[in-house]
Image (cartoon, rainbow, N blue to C red):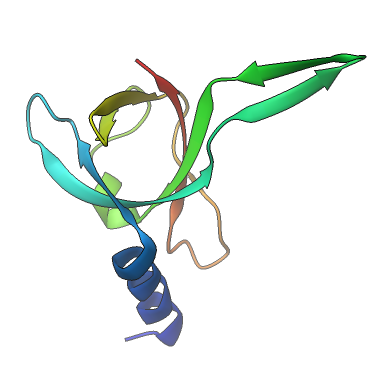
Length: 101
């Protein structure tokens, strides 16, 4: 197996947090790597907090799911608000942009 894929898999297994994809139907367990909890945008002297959460996920875990998918993380539900996109040149992980439901 590709050493880069092994390293990514090890990162998810050791540092990933547990989540459930589509909790009301298929309830597929997934591992997620949090990227950033919320985004802050500065507009002049104001700082606006966007309630988005970015998470990395393995492509095989998102197979068949996309924009609108529901994730349950530590009892909180989040909706994927845009199509998952590859966040690395080898396409070993996807970046999910989520918002609270």
